[in-house]
Amino acid sequence: MAGVEDARTRCGWHGADAAYTCYHDEEWGRPDADETRLFEKLCLEGFQAGLSWSTILRKREAFRAGFAGFDPERLARFGEADVERLLADPGIVRHRGKIESAINNARCLLAMRERGESFAAFLWSFEPPPGERPDRIDAAWVRANPETPASKRLSKALKARGFTFVGPTTAHAFMQSKGLVNDHVDECFCRAECERDREAFVRPT
Image (cartoon, rainbow, N blue to C red; front, side, top):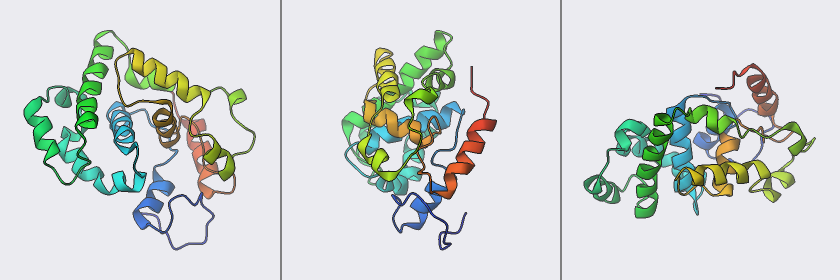
């Protein structure tokens, strides 16, 4: 775990929370092609709607335990008894609609696989072209853009495949966190690291 007491410049949205700072340093903005991790993040971003990511981060291990590690094959088999079990679990966000959405989305992912679609390749196909991105990323731009043209396209395509709780703002937060865009501000030490990671990253096809 990276130290959080150093003097390196960061984005700042993580505040003084050590776990949140480590998430910023080690996870946020790092490109990922693992379908289970991508699916987990998409589900958790849906649960975050109306809440802070720090709340979800503190509950992430409980979510993983309750939702079968976000394995789509296992989660897709959840039924009403599982929904009731999760509604009684104080370790997660107990919202029936969001719980049922995660199960629905697992089934939608499996339907994509049955049609021969790669979930990872599908998501990464919405990586925005350079012309849609500003030359400089600062905190004001990030605050002013809770959604983008690319996140609107991704949201629309997910909804067309039956996914729920995947609005443009949720899609944008997902794209930021999984490295489809690099929204670390220019002064943040992670920005250059994420750029190197993105340059070396092999996009799934």
